Length: 106
Image (tube, rainbow, N blue to C red):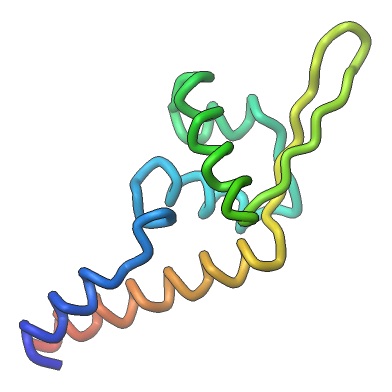
């Protein structure tokens, strides 16, 4: 693959997922069946508001499910990737790995 082709492929990366915070969220959730909001916040280092904003974008794209419940008087937010979300993050990482290998063969 030529340098030009590599850069053209980079330009086609899915921006919704490739944005660093959302890539971190999707990657973390891809390694587990489900996670709660606080665990995801600790893993990503995002503020509550920032994490909520990114989660909403991913939920609207049907890449993850957000389930809210109560534990006592406290809300509990559980998150998990949808089938579509798991497929898209897997495809994204495969594409990144392929691009890395192509660039390394120069």
